Image 1 (cartoon, rainbow, N blue to C red):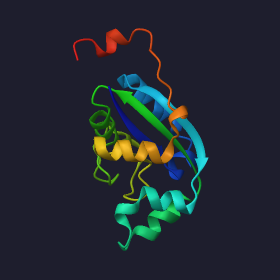
Image 2: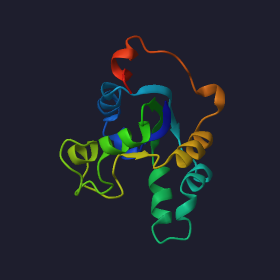
Image 3: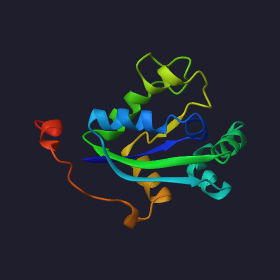
Image 4: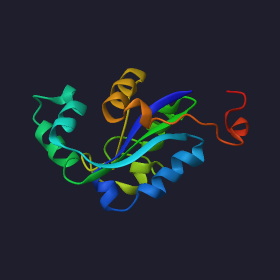
Length: 151
């Protein structure tokens, strides 16, 4: 099973879409391994977006992610990174296909509701940045053999 980080960004929280979107991930068969509501400070925002430091849009990213509370979570399942990114759709909401989360709820490139890890390496780094090991819960979901069977 693979883990991935998901951030419900300030626009998602302010629009009260967290529950509706989280339901899509659970309906697909992903398991919640961690979930919390936090206010991101500048230091954490800069660590998360470190690869963009020095780029013209960096300050806007930091202002956005620190502009309101976020819900951050860990989702787990078969090919969780690919599954989450497919459900999210294109980064730019105006280009995202209908039926994807961004295609259904976003018309912006920056205010695109969610962040999802883009690789196993990113997921590992990001999970360690946002969660302490004791905040990650391992448990079995009843009936999971019907979701993951044959994988």
